[in-house]
Amino acid sequence: MDEAAVGGRAGRASAAGSAVEKSLRVLEAVAAPGGPHRLADVTAAAAVPKSSTFRILASLIDQGFVRQEADSRYGVGPRLRGLSALVGAGEPAGIGHILGELRRTTGQTVHLALHSGRTITYIRKLENEDQPFRTASRVGMCMPLHTTAIGKSILALLPAEEVRELIGATGLPRRTPHTLTTARALHAQLAAVRAQGFALDDEENEPAIRCIGAAIPGPAGRPVGGVSVTTVTFLVSREEIEAYAPALRAAAEALAPLL
Image (spheres, rainbow, N blue to C red):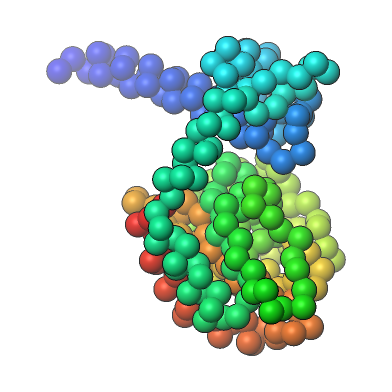
């Protein structure tokens, strides 16, 4: 086959892939909690030039995935809501069983989150109703990668260059006095995560909250999300939460073929 022809098709595919990636990032930014969102906010969250963001939004509005409000902000359209309902209805029943078993084994709150661009998005949360506390997390909430146990478990399995690019693009914003805010500290912890097979969030995302998380690998080994066990520091010590690691890793492995 002619190499120029192959190269031409590869070039077009690459350009198309880039366009698709930008459109998906814009759609994720519109669907983020707190909407409807201003054009400037969508542009910043998606990391897409303003002119391109405007064109993508116009197309998504035409297709019904995005809705423009009277104040010119952008919100989720009916077609995207319908797609969300279809995805939720099609969730494998085994996911709930695995998460429920992890909650029963640990007696703690369990989260399931998917990797979504530069954040994670919680898609399931199971609380222990007998506990005297409630965490602020909720389904649909997006959280940073570098401050959460699930996020750090995902970062540990991403290529180093991709992690460096993410840090360069978003920085490492501080959420608590314990947040890792330097690349050196984060990379050192990610090395430990790879060695032990789980990550800890020790009051790095929310005061008094301690979590342990494990990544869920996709078909090609790239992490698609993660699962975590969430506790409070005044009830569960660091040593005690680390004892949940075997059950947590088993849950992550069981969830992998279902996501």
